[in-house]
Picture 1 (cartoon, rainbow, N blue to C red):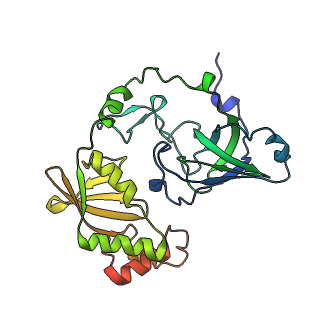
Picture 2 (cartoon, rainbow, N blue to C red):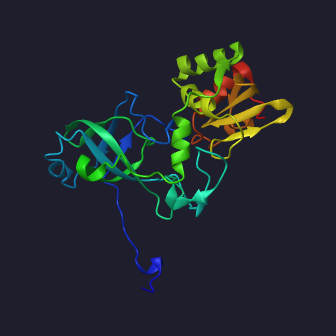
Picture 3 (cartoon, helix red, strand yellow):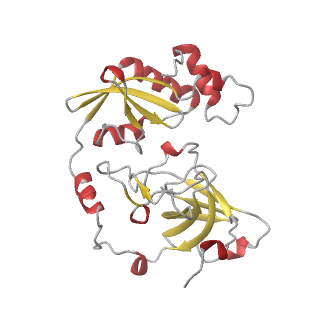
Length: 274
């Protein structure tokens, strides 16, 4: 078959959007965390007859959400997965968002259906992700727990072992994180700690880089966390805004995530934009 993808254009339109409260990708887990109690709302668009399309969906314990990686503008044939060693893999052997067609697929628990709204459980989507389709999850057809995992088998075995590192907060960093949580409702440390407990070494996808003086920097969405590693101890020294002052103060910078929080943070602790 000698056909170019450009000869077969497809048109997709969202049927709705999900509200998760996660404004940056760092806050979303790489896969849904089944042990975490959370609620998100899928809001379908009015005026399309979707109320009738939702008939009989209540009663299914889990559903599939088919969605669009709307924040990705390009794709890569080889990607660096966040788990495992620093080895690039073919994108079709991963769940990477950098795909030729950025389509995501996530199984979520379904808690309720009311009108055009569905309350769902743990997921890996960010706020406002476009939903393309909804399908019921069928255990007999969709679950194969004994299947081989390819290159991920070694990674999964490693994940099953006890965590390799302990994460400690210096008082200064603890005060900063507490201030962000209390005054702005911003809390990214649990996600960061989960990553650091496994592997704090430099890694592009985990957004960890080594700086001068034995200090490491980790990108946590709109924030940067600085830490050192002493044996199996990860010591978090401080937190800083991820955007430089010149950009935050620039007219028209309202789209910068957590801009007001970063400006207020800089008044208390500065923003050297390391």
